[in-house]
Length: 107
Length: 107
DNA sequence: CTCTAGATTCTCATTATTGTGAACTCAGTA
DNA sequence: TACTGAGTTCACAATAATGAGAATCTAGAG
Image 1: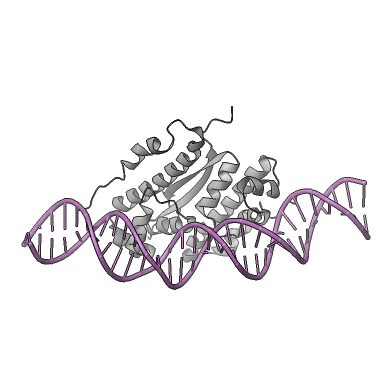
Image 2: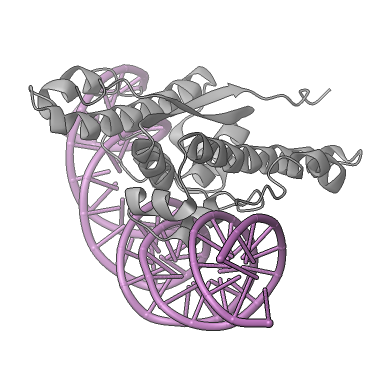
């Protein structure tokens, strides 16, 4: 039926793809991680709800290609508005937190 | 010096302004709460860092009016991209979580 | 009162995200 | 093989957020 695809593999290669010892790249890496995590969370929530992309699209009020875009780990354009709509469609709510940066302060 | 304004009062009146016993309004209320919380968090992080809106604007790479807009509790247009930029400017990172909805399931 | 820094509000051009349909891949199945 | 459902990718119009400057407001200092 459904394809598994790279949803769980993407994060495996992210670090190699970005950081590779360059401290300046760590910021981009963190952003990429955030994007990949959001994509994975949406995918998890949708599949655990037993919905296809098409079905979730109807609930959210958009198209399946838009849902697919949200679940793309490389997508960088996540907006809060669409995340809130997706969350509401899955009976969830979005929480935003500002956490201490994982990066070491400028030594 | 700085004005205190409604940053801490806003949330006081949000519930009265929205819900008022109407269950259908609760969704809008939750969204408004999220927006207000983001605004307050940015305000708190900025002031605790001892920065003016102008100074934060420079760090973020935008204008002071844009920062002011982010700290407006009524602003509904928060995007993830600007939140990440603000977080990075304050040596923080943004974390997104999908939480169980506070609303009671359809009884 | 005047001056100033900080903050707020407004407008609008620029930029970014969303909505959409179509074409495509893939896996399963008849 | 052909067919189907699910997912992916692309392009582009429609919509929404950002960037910026100017005007305004407020509180405190002088």
